[in-house]
Image (cartoon, rainbow, N blue to C red; front, side, top):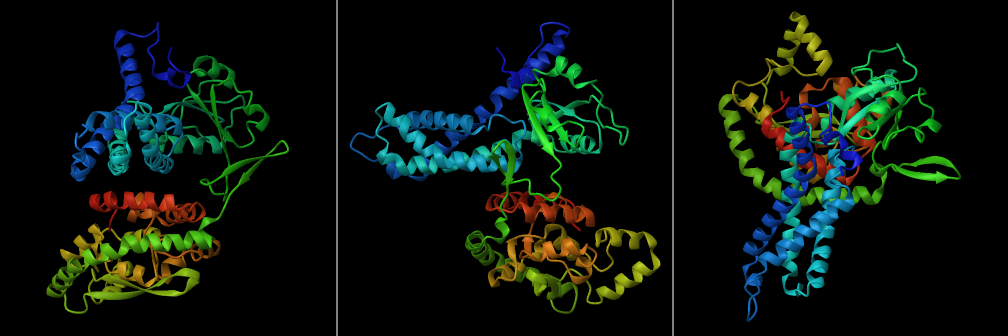
Length: 485
């Protein structure tokens, strides 16, 4: 029997040709076995690395036990059990940040489960406890990397997540459908929309599958119903929808969307949210963690900064490192350090271009950046900006406490002034950072509206998990130079 959540991948008994049945069977197989297989592979790599890194423990004892087979079997079983219980094999509706959190939790719990499995089979695990811990940590990191590599492949073959039916037809439903189409990694693949009352306010980007009852008869056992809570569907109707799985998406407005806990208040549904960005303990912990990362990175970066300083001075006379005043925490000015990538008369060059080129003026007004900027130094300037190496001196700002490693980007006064006053106050309530959410998502491709949306999401949903996610995504974004100007 195929579980209901996976029924969309199972071959049907009639109405499909042999080729379609084969493709459906292939998708179902990929969906069911890919992630468990990756975890088993990660466990083998973790064991191999741990036994290689700790050979003394591996070979200890009068009659050395060959740990490879029992440890690999126990760790593989532990990872499969932990990830199954945590829900990592249910790829429908879990975002990348939530999956990262669950994988880290799994890596922490896996050593205990591994020791328990070994003890159950009368295998003494105490001498190998360091091996088990190192193997679990390595397997967790490898599993995270393998999932990141394989996820796009599974998405491309329709083997990630479940089919999704959008319930509703108004602006909220259209926006929800567009977000699901834009973010296939969420694992909710829109196949159409259903609504008892069709709204003509906005065109839906999906096919109309009829009323909710008609759509349920066709797809109720295999599709996840994703309900746009905008007044078209009453809250009392959600529990009566004829679908195995239903996800209700309320219009959150300015509410955080992460760290939300549900509370039953005498029959009423309550949402409990916490503003961790203002919690003293969390902010101190963030400071400790960013120093642990920044100090060694800064020491490694010092020789690189020295070489780049020499190259800049060879191309353009004047200081190689310049100081720019940016808006910091509580609106206080921050002296941000950068390697100079522009001519010393950059402001005059910009003013001349904007005065004579309307297209450049329009681009500047929208992005506050230019794709072809006459201020940038030839060769070295473009390289530094695309690689983000010009921002290496800002690690000193982090050590001084002027900036955080992760946070909203520190902007000059003229940039901040383009935002609304309410968002300006929200932005100044946290310390700006060297990298942040909109840098890894869009970089310079984000216009002012998108910058505001991403920074608002980061501040309202901040957690150490979110910072860890941004740190892990920053390196690929920099190496690919996606959207950099």
